[in-house]
Image 1 (cartoon, rainbow, N blue to C red):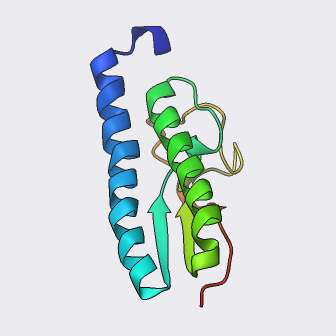
Image 2: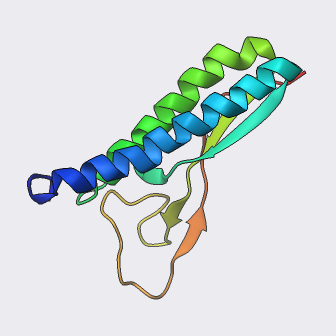
Image 3: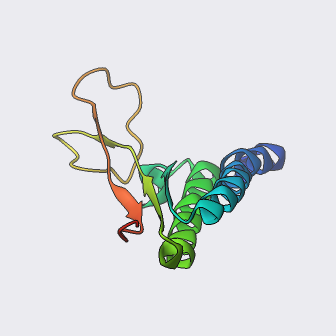
Length: 124
């Protein structure tokens, strides 16, 4: 539950996922700007596209990654740099593409499914 989640764990999640992606993109974009083109594919999660009960910190970090990817894609498209994110998620025949609740400890019927987020601008 969100109210019971330790603050230091939340801060570590944000630092790892959000800050980590920001620092990586900062250096990648500097290089790509100097060469005039490039492509970045960030890894987010289906939890960054819909809320998932019991995973508020993780979902918040993944929503931030998707938002950062979309914002940077809009900023850098005119420079010939494409920025996208893939968002792996659980897929099950019973629940469809992405369940609103996490499916844990279910050994059968689980496979992976990806969705994309971000820019679809052509590169030079």
